[in-house]
Image (cartoon, rainbow, N blue to C red; front, side, top):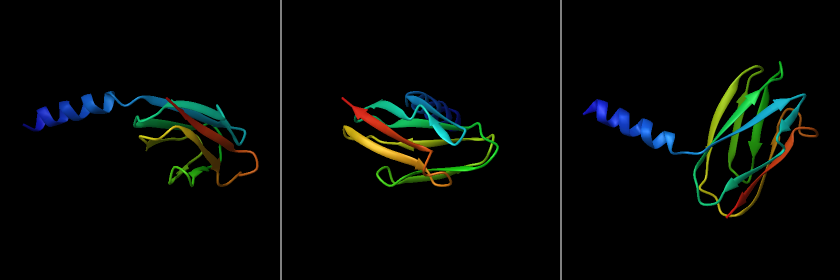
Length: 103
């Protein structure tokens, strides 16, 4: 029974679309990410900088510190169409971006 649940869990996680954002030079790449509406997504944030950064979004109700040279996974959605800004808490003047949700 445990094996079946593990297999089912792996299958369900594989169905979640994955999108990647990198942090380099205190900037997010890409700074605009387009994702599908009404779909749960997996956001992989890779910090290429040697210093930590915090991915933060009031609209997405998410915040996550990513240490330098590390990566983090953030699940978001399903979301309605629209723009959802995010920023780097430790470098808010340069580290800014938006997740655009489209039909």
